[in-house]
Image (cartoon, rainbow, N blue to C red; front, side, top):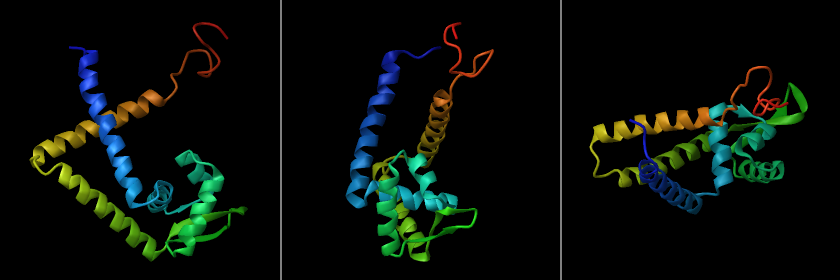
Amino acid sequence: MPHEYEDLEQVMYPLARLGQSMRRAQTRAIDPTRQAILQQAAAKGRVRPSELAAELDLYPSSITRQTRSLEDDGLIAVEADPADRRSCLISLTEPGWDEVRRLTRQGLDRFAEFMAGWDAEDVRTLGRLLTRLEASADAAKRPAKRPGGRPWQQRDGQE
């Protein structure tokens, strides 16, 4: 049976409010750009600032300022990129890994407070459903392939 708009509202509005609440809490703990750089470096190992800017949808100057600060704090290492001498690679230092683990623990502890009255099976079910929702959202972002060319070449039968 297809869902109704009212069904979607019962999901969308609480998710939006929860997302806003989590972003506010996160920004009180650490600058969001700083945290995002640390998380990307943790996930990718070594990453170029240009990749960070593209991935995080930020201006390169924001990345440059934050990486300098993170390097000054000893949380990341910046080294020349052997494949492209015009660029550099960012990676976490041991204190940087400690900071990522601390922030992850802090976030999970806070989230555990939200889920305190839930049993384990409900938490697992929510996790599966949110993972499915995330995959659906990613699929919806991809441009639809149209026969006869690239997605931007044809619109409603016109070129």
